[in-house]
Image (cartoon, rainbow, N blue to C red):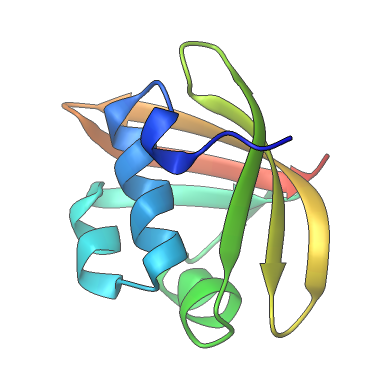
Length: 107
């Protein structure tokens, strides 16, 4: 069972997932604070390079299975053209209504 994106609890996380799933780079950037950071499987990554490779050029898509922590901790099936589908965890830090940091990795 998945949670429809429009029902995600946290508005900043909802904007992030909506933009990612729409492959909308402009809306995605707007969902982030200036200087936002990220990690993948515990390793710090360059956010712009990572999202270009893992999301935009490979048509990344999230189907959210569950949320907790006021909607800032998700488990989702993430798929893209490079890696196929995998079960992933996403943890978000929100500042001023935008994503300041996200950490993702296999769930």
